[in-house]
Amino acid sequence: MNDKEIAQNKGHLHPISQAIEDIRRIFKEMGFAIVEGPEVESEFYNFDALNFPKDHPARDMQDTFWIKDPKPINSGSSPVQQEKREKAEKMLLRTHTSPVQIRYMQSHKPPFGIIVPGKVFRNEATDATHEAQFYQYEALFVAKKASMANLKGVIETFFKEFFGPDVEIIFRPSFFPFVEPGVEVAMKWKGKVLEMLGAGMVHPNVLKAGGLDPEQWQGFAFGGGIDRLILLKYGIDDVRLLYSGDLRLVDQF
Ligand code: YSA
Image 1 (cartoon, protein in one colour):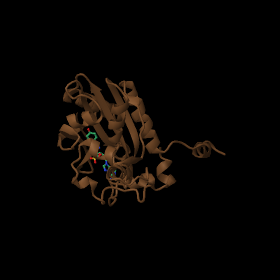
Image 2 (tube, rainbow, N blue to C red; image 1 turned 135 degrees about the vertical axis):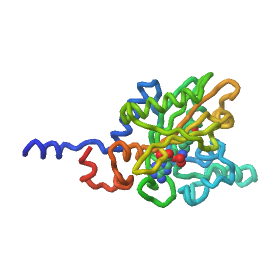
Image 3 (spheres, rainbow, N blue to C red; image 1 turned 90 degrees about the vertical axis):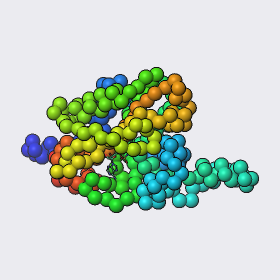
Image 4 (cartoon, rainbow, N blue to C red; image 1 turned 30 degrees about the vertical axis):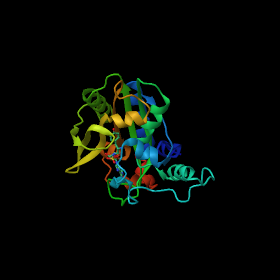
């Protein structure tokens, strides 16, 4: 067997796993802890606790994979038990990694900074920049004082470490119910502007849902697409190729 054949047979990490390793390393160096959360989530953590109004379009069947026929959590039939059961039974495949923000705040005392890489799911049509199952990385920082300047600094440091010092990123205003103010970060890609992440200062209602007093604590958060980081870093044309199992793509990494 020649050297090339030996190298080919050795195997290696998939580019998504490599990107997750890079993300973990870069944020660890900035002092963030690596955290995970469940992929099957409750409507409460995925939407309610994140300040999504009841009628927000993101809750539509088109965006969310709801879990069918969940098992009853108790068998009582009083109105209170029925209401509890209905609330508890609405389960889904998480549409973003943001529910881990609430879970972490509920079980940890600030100050803290966490990074959550993980799989998410959306019931939507796929194209070159959209998959129905893809990866996000979520960051949450909570302390007595936190500012948009801190948020911008952390995001810029991450992009420079991931892409190299000359990377160009665009900050522009955006809206997410769980932050105020909200921004997004985009990059130029194939003559278009491609959204890379959503971010902002944690909304007081979200701090409250996490059991924290917004008079005492401030925070910033962001959540970005890992697949899109890979598209731009390696010049891949279509996110769907990452899930195709085609070794001609995977073996290039
Ligand atoms: C916003 C503010 C915060 O304080 C914290 C997090 C966020 C992000 C929010 N949770 C969210 O999911 N926003 S998003 O729907 O715009 O997705 C975030 C990123 O995921 C996008 O910028 C994009 O990079 C990626 N993404 C979204 N849908 C995708 C996708 N990547 C591949 N396929 C899809 N279908």
